[in-house]
Amino acid sequence: MSAGNHDQPLVRHGAAGPRNLAGLAVVLLLAVLLIGGTWQYTRQRIADNGARQILAGISVVLPGILYDNEPNKDRVLQDTGAGRPLPIYRARRNGSPVAAVVTVSAPDGYVGPIRMLVGIAADGRVLGVRITAHQETHGIGAAIATEPPTWLAGFVGRSLTDPPEARWNLRTDGGEFDAIAGATVSSRATLAGVRTAVQYFNTHRDEIFSTPALPAGTP
Amino acid sequence: MTPDNASNSSAGQLLAEGLWWNTPGLAALIGLCPLLAVSTSFAAGFALGLASLAVLCSSNVLIAALAPWIAPRFRLPAFLLLIAALVTTVDLLFEARWFDLYGQVGLFVPLIVTNCLILARGESFAAHHGVWPAFLDGLGYGLGFITLLAGLGALREVLAPGLLVAALPAGAFFLLAALVALRQLVVSRRGAA
Image 1: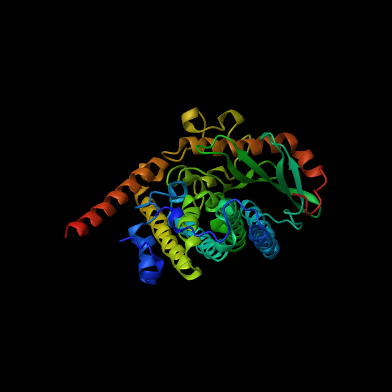
Image 2: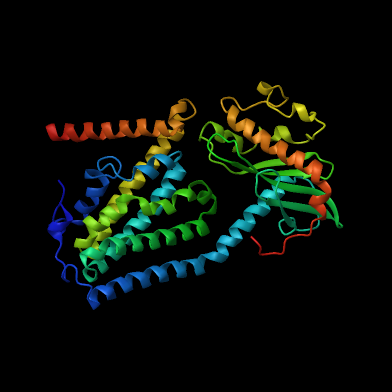
């Protein structure tokens, strides 16, 4: 079965003749055309998909909130503690701040970072939380992201005064929040992410709403 | 069993080769990396299997068509370049068409390029056969791979709520081992009969 038995090279081994080069050139050209063509064909759609996902995410973490701007375009990048700037989307009505959607990347997931969107009303109350990306174990830690988000709903209406900041922990850690059974690590990481968003919002509220929006098209 | 000469083997035999006799992951223990990492659910397994099938069929066809033009010493880089270009193409199409599913398995689609199954079929079969048998070979092996990925995914998805280990990567090894053993049992029974 070795490949050599079947080999009947039309060109001598070792000779970099014009025919070899032509063959390689065809392969190269084919590769360039394939990738270039597909990229051209798909890039608009991929960009639309990304934008649609952000829009959908924003609307689910701001349930029942009235705003008249386009939060996905009213975007700033700020470092909420992840070590790199992440987007914050602002929702306004008649120009005044109504709510913000803070992107958090909680570093301490069981498998890797857990990315989430946290919707926070102008008065500091949590409006909604959605996990946007995670690699938690299927069937265990992945329960943080199940739909409908029954566990995440436990954060809705909470703020840094309810419960007091020191009690923003899992019950096992002396706090007020239940962990998902069997998924303490994932629950703790998610809780820490929500807490980070709320803390950042409380201390940087004015900065969040007054920073000029990034121009459209910036990554 | 294993048809060595494609000119004597029918389309059915070519398909059966990849689907049963030499099933990737079960009989030929290659392509295990994505198999174990992605087979957490039926949908994820099926999606990555489909992407692999698309790459395998198209790379086999292109390699069969281009191999006569490329000297053996240049084949490896040329085939790898082709496979990488095809994987990138499939990756972009996947992200454009099935965005939600891409979120789950997207990480592993570019890694298809490192799946030795694809280079192995290209180098050991497609490069020495015509376009049509190469396509059938890719189809057979691709379908075999999908069946295993989706099947293992479904199995783990069903077992995970009651049997925690099934959800973990280690559980994938155990279940795969069980499937390999099962297949060996069937093959040896047949051989004895």
